[in-house]
Length: 211
Image (cartoon, rainbow, N blue to C red):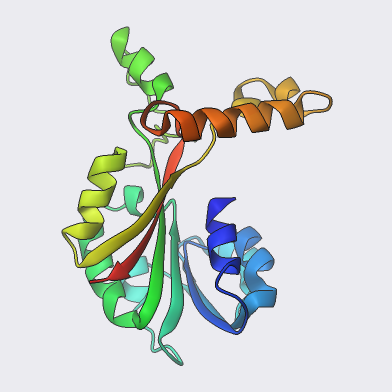
């Protein structure tokens, strides 16, 4: 997972804010690297499962929740699959800037609406929402690689890197996620995302700094 790699690459003793932490699956994996781990989650049921990994979990609306008060500014703020659920992600991005240390990083993942699966659907006149994935029915904003970058740059951030994630083919065909095919399928999907990210990337992960 690219988000995980980027957090762990910053070393230990981190202060991290995890937005939309859910059941805490991501928090559990970064917990050993964190001196101070805070988070905000809207869903009380999910938060109850995940809050044990946090020093300061907050349950509630993101924009209200990030007002803190927090114990300190953050080395990393993680917004994984969050901004596409907000009618005005610009408001959240503006509120996050003062929470970051001067050398802090905002890590954002956004689904790629220009993915080949969406393009083929449009070719045949289909744009159908689904329970999960790129066209999750709770998504209210849609982004390509370029418009995701523009969102960050127009709201006070400098994009340091952009990486595409592999398509989760095993969700469509579960057999592809089991041995002996799993390793080969994952490696092929990852290679395809690197080769043609705008078409075959499933999500884009942006690392940005306050500008």
